[in-house]
Length: 609
Image 1 (cartoon, helix red, strand yellow):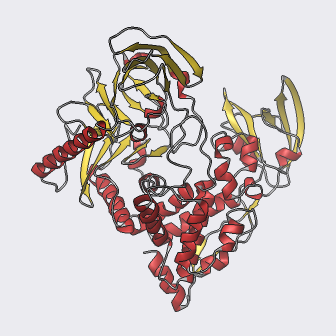
Image 2 (cartoon, rainbow, N blue to C red; image 1 turned 90 degrees about the vertical axis):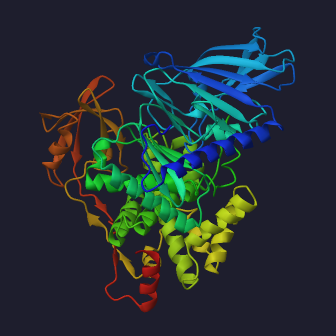
Image 3 (cartoon, rainbow, N blue to C red; image 1 turned 30 degrees about the vertical axis):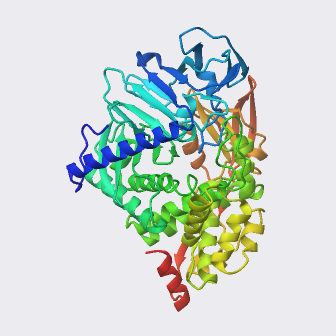
């Protein structure tokens, strides 16, 4: 995998020994498990990448019974949306171990029932269409491939616990396979997983990606990148190392033997995994200082998920039911507190100043507090209902829902400051995370319940935390930011202030150059004028508008101006009048007090560098 790798400050001989030992241990462990459960084997090939079809052969041994159900997951852990991956499968076939065809039928949208006639071995084959470059989808093109295992590999119902090997047959034009799976010694591009849950949590990047390697906290790490552009590789790797080591210092250890950062190409989004993360990247962002700092926040977020979600998790998030939604009210903890820690980790890694952290926290608070949904949905409901609305941002969702990422970061801030203040600096949210990791992941080997999370927080604080858990997390009541931030000698700007420019209140999307309304703010000038989604805006005050010119045309007016709006709805041209207004918002800007008390100063110094 590391044909063009370079380890910074890590002896090559020691690196080779490390890889051999890791591979040998992985194979030995897989062989030991195989004595208890028959192994499964998968071969995936890609003979013609421009067709965008992978070919999969799956052999299942040690089977019993007249029928066997082969199932494709309907979603992938970490991306809380039903994806229905089975829709991309074609030309399913089944045969027994001797090559004799077997009859089969579809029994559910993602289940192929094979009439095996008590055959101990069944081999199924199928093709999977893959042409979406996204962390929760699979991709195959002439520039490489990316496999999301839940959308590529089936399992036999009731046998998720079986060990499995995956052999990747590379296209001749490509030379690299990058994944968090353990390699099988002596078998190129072949990997092993102790069970299908592990396989489903290890995406695979295929092609001619660039490989960078580094050691951090005494463990090997790799970066497999589709395109890093003109980035300074030394600085890039050095900053990743700082993030890894800040995390190891926070948690006391790292729960893996090796880790891989998979940079799969341009786009949006990232997805966490047990010992890897898959992220998209616009290479230009690595050479822009402000964009680069934003990308470091993004990668710190995904990396910290190896603790908060993969190890420290609500009990609903593993073991998974891959057929349907897995509901929890605690995504504000799993995702939102991870947002909080992305800022904290960058500060501790020396990559973000205290003032920058305060600016990011204030901006995050403003994002959810100024959103219309803040008045309708609390953090726990946002978490539970993510399967309905979070990834479908139509007008209704935009106006009635809240991001558990943002609001959870605010709750993480309040929790941390309250625990520090109540315990007189003896405990913090860091102690909560370490306790959850040690107690539930390492000792109990399970997730935590909602009540257990609260109990750990309250033990750390030494007091009940009723206000945070019974009011702030579960209702839409106002939060007392001034009180909580005051514990650290901070003040917050809660004064409503007019935004610059006039307010129209309609968001639009480009459709062939024309602005088409995609959402309307409640009680906005656009709403009061009767505009609604799918209206095509044609002209303002007689002047033709396009998606490109709309904002400038509105900003050429001032609040209080009356504007004639010509628009098209259901094929008919209509006209209305909107009275532009002044929108007021609170900035939630957080700044240090000039004269904090000794207690406030001590808490702030212990909290942020």
